[in-house]
Image (cartoon, rainbow, N blue to C red; front, side, top):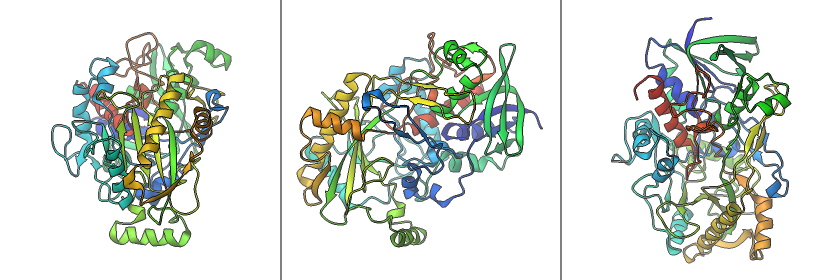
Length: 525
């Protein structure tokens, strides 16, 4: 085997960016390992393919442990298993969060003024080029092409309830209702695999190995020197002359550290794993957004419900191929907004996603006829969870415990977010479009009924972060330059290092982390 300067474990949203950026130097040898496969299936690239992804395609098939504050439910927990990671299977929403998110981290080099240039470096924005946006980057960022007329009625309804129309959630202000921009180019998903990795794979100094399950890290004399991975051909050991980089995500990266004997000593000892480095923060601080939806029946065929019938799916596919329009051109969640559970202070704590149908995501009800779904999520949860191991075997699913609503304030805020969502959907501009509320339903009016509904219907927004968080205290896993605390030769670059979940979707922030990490690794900052 050739020697490697950098070995990247995980070819997801961050790993694909990092492999492309590090291999820009022709004198640098980069090995990228991905447990999943290539993104060859058409559904990875058609915007509406997202609906299949949340139900298991290219996913690890994990679920949470029973959530004791949700009546003991286990929640489906989609985590990508394909190059491009979450950017290859998500709803393509390009949302960065709020400047106060990053300033609030209080970490040198990671404030808003520090990270904005990295958001812009990635971006090839279809519409904006200004202080907040740029053109010419690898990542396509475009306006939606598949929204339906009811989306405009939704924005009018939000305005009627007090939300201003906002043409750019990533611009001067975050609050308001409007259209999301999407990680697309020419009505085709612009994943980090498509935007960054595929062009870089022509370079002779970058090697991608797919279907490579990383086993453990190799540690010698206080330094991570390489790792082992398994493919159909057997197990292989590889060494990094410079650094090993974990980019396996907020679940995968802590799990790999734990399997390697790096983490809380008590947890490792209980599993019979030899302790290489006692690092108590590994797998702690898991944060995620919880989603509560309201579903409404339409007065006519105003949504994309019914297009999953085989004959209509075929018709939609042909329309997309010929015109780049129609149901297949929609990410299905192109409209939404940001607002407040309490007084307005410039830092919204609710996010809305309008789904142009019902039953789009796994675990959400599908109604008869045409319907629409308005998802609401409280954006700054106080609850913290964990990622632990059930066994040392890499094939064993990790124990994912987001610990949703452990803090009562999170439940209260989630119910308030749902209340605002119902107010919007019941506003006058939507009355010609909507017949009735199906869920929670007109009888769900008191707190007890709404809490019961929340326990029954809550789902993840697929935004896990924080399990290898950066910082300068004893519970931090990595330093501000993303080096593992206490061992040399290893960095972590993915959503796991984000200390507090941003007030938005998390894919754009994860790409930003990888862009900045590339400069840190190359000594450019």
